Length: 137
Image (cartoon, rainbow, N blue to C red; front, top):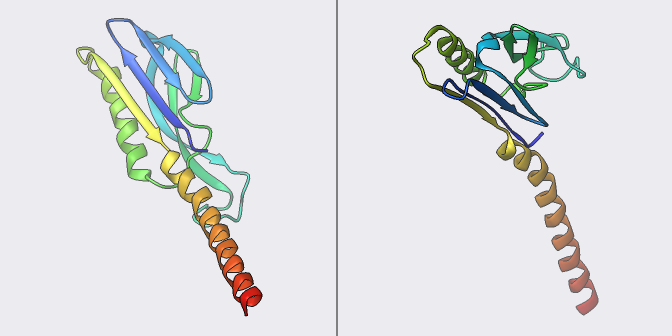
């Protein structure tokens, strides 16, 4: 978690570049669309999950299906629908020169990791203050 996932397709270069954990390059001509796919999660009882299922955006190509992200955080479901529509419009409208979609989860990861860190730091400061009161007192 905490990565930027992006897809950029340029008709002039005839190239799509999907950047996530690794970089994948494929021809613009191979892209046939996108769909929202239900998939099984590793956390069947997680809040907001329907019996261990969630959704993710999947790119459809002539060579197979490519997940835009391996998982979807559940935040920004409207964003996923907009991204699907953007991919489908790019495939249909041959005059559209460029497609770029992006999902930035760095802020989410900072919040998930930062909150416990700040709580721990607060506990440490509180313990030091109490120790000093005890020592001085």
